[in-house]
Image 1 (cartoon, rainbow, N blue to C red):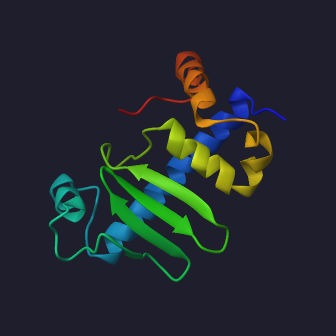
Image 2 (cartoon, rainbow, N blue to C red):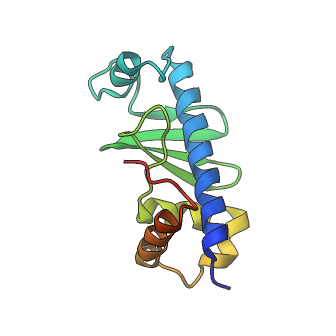
Image 3 (cartoon, rainbow, N blue to C red):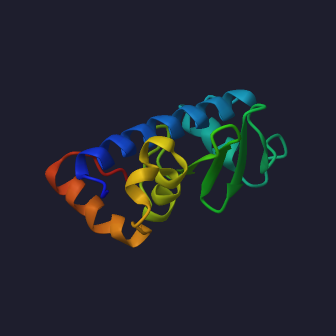
Length: 138
């Protein structure tokens, strides 16, 4: 079964919502309001001694900052959500590699992705942006 543009758009919207919620929760955990740019910049700064680069958001969710991203892993579902840190507070810049990891680790979308690789998603994303099913976030 191949993923349709409509299903992919639905998955991307869920991915964006989930990533934004996780980043807000992580910011709150360490006392930051990530909707305020100065607080967000301090929060994600690598040299910030108040925020460990990896750890537990909760008993169910681990996080790890790496490069310009933050990886979240839900232990119970084994779901992976990768947040690109460049577009706060509305996260959602889509990277094909990270999107594929999300699709593969999300029960609802696994069945569509077994024969799909991350490069196959690139032209699909271009088409989704072109037809307006999703908005490009830069």
